Image (cartoon, rainbow, N blue to C red; front, side, top):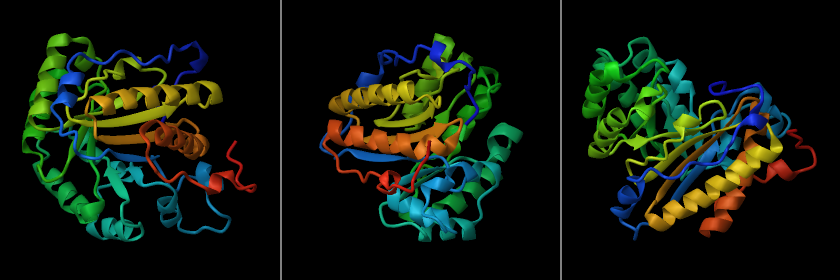
Length: 298
């Protein structure tokens, strides 16, 4: 992920900001009898930079990836409208309990900018519904220049998006965060329609760390800086914050690790899983092949 990349990440204060005051209230209204559900993964399974993650000779990476992680942030659906046959193929290559989190296609979000997209939304939803029980949360990523002036399009999209498919939204225009009245309005919309407000942690856009949950789910897109020290320290901080949110009522965690150079993403994700297992008393599978002698990702 190149978004938010800077040349000197060592100059950045990576401290997580305090929670938005309304986050605690959202979590307090949750059913805390529900067990904590955690999905951690990467954004891709077949990028060239990741070749050393797989046993030598692996031809089809997804089945192996799905033995190591329980989720994938599916960016492939952003570039091309998914076809039913492709979704079924992906679904059937993964084990029970695996989840796909497909990004909404750019023809909807970026080309038409949510304008007159109802037929495309129907096509997208019809396709991803074929993930069946392996469908996690679909997510909409808005363009950097999609600001409040287009709010009527976002409102219409959210109100008409099929409620059978969980939805998360990532906003990137600074107006959504830096204008308090605008922020309050969109957060109310998301709460009303149970839309998860995505948090992005990337070096060059610290304003995306709004720390405002609108559902009792935390959908976090974490972008490392390819710096072993700060990348792991940031994951330690996220572990502590998620533990706090779980204590307040959080029950669903979706955490996806990106890197500007993706070869280290599986290592960081494995590190994070180990930390979460300890902090939350979980038993998430930690990728095992990473520690074998022939696996060198650095």
